[in-house]
Amino acid sequence: MKLSDEKKLDLLFKYSLSMRDSLPKDIHNKFNTYKIFTYFVNLCKANRFPQVLSDDDFDELKTPIEYRGAREIDHHANLLCDYDYHYGYGIYGSGTYITDDLFRARKYAYNNATNVMVFKFIGKVLDKKHIRTYEKFLFNLIDEKPQDVIIEDVEDKRKLEIIANYYHHIKSNKDKEFFKYVIILKDYSIIPLFLGYDAIDNNCLIILNREKIVISQSEFDRITSASKNYKGGIIDFETKSAGEFLME
Image 1: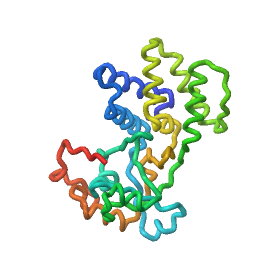
Image 2: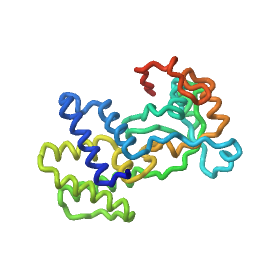
Image 3: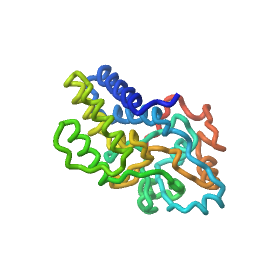
Image 4: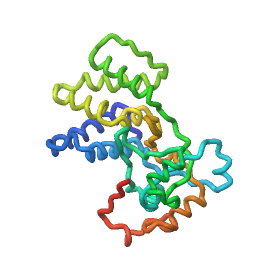
């Protein structure tokens, strides 16, 4: 069953409220922000596996090469192969941080070139300028101020108005403040994901929808064959512990 935008927003906020109510001392904790983002990625079905193309088809794909560096190659294999993957988070928003700068990627791989994943990205990106514009547009609606922001994308505007309308129907002032904090302010990735974007460009490119990652068969084989838990692209539950959490 396909969820409406209104229902997705309602489920997201109710989930966030349940975390606030069960962990009142930790509502500002970064890990809880990560859990809210993870919940919403799954709700939006932005958790499908990356695409693996033959080397020839990958080379013919007219989009730039991207890089991702990690401390361990299993972190890449986890992203490529596991339904229970590390969704990623950081100060610029939640998601998978990537770069078109090989030297920067090697830094995150601790200068181990074998721990740099090479791939392409084919998704829809919301840039930093629009993130700030949309945020201002929303707050004008929420605070019922004269609107001095123009949103050119009709569908984006419609969905932003859904967010503002939902806010105005919240009865408790405490819950309204929490809604603004969690949905608009805390994580730059929530609103773009709600709008249907696959990534944000917020000082760096951050992937929200991993299905838009495209990797060559040879690179997929290189990463999985070198991994501990995902040889051949298959999860080895004997080597992957139940509580394993792959931090970047």
